Image (tube, rainbow, N blue to C red; front, side, top):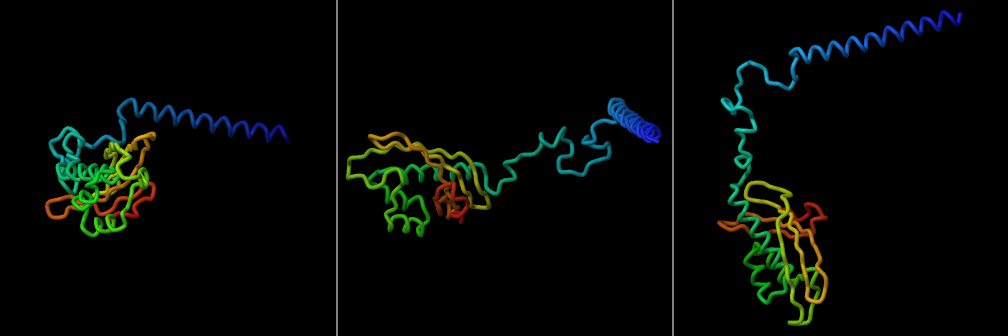
Length: 194
């Protein structure tokens, strides 16, 4: 009986192997002889907004999809960069510049609490020079007249090594100006988004 069981198993395995080989060869031949890529568009007329273009990527202007113009977003990025430099800096006009770059409520909060950046602490008057290099590294959130940028600040206080900080700056279009409504450690997520 074991011979019968063994030969019927062999027959099933041989038939299954032949079926797999036939299917593989059939699919390969179909693709080679014109089955083509299933992702290719059909020859039927298209009613998409990209009619007449060679491909969708050639006619899609991604900047046109943004809620604000590219120039507006560049202006906002410049404010985020400047605010970061002011926040981490130790200039005498720091409070005035924060007031100019932030919405009044947020500026009042920062100046009333005398928020000092983590890199500076409370240096003795006039003894610490601070150099700040800030740049926008990405966008965390974007909506009409509001954007949250990720900003990197490389801060060097005289007599110490350079430190790097990653912050998120949320800005809103307030009249004709972009103003900061939140500025927080980027690792905290979207808690300061307004």
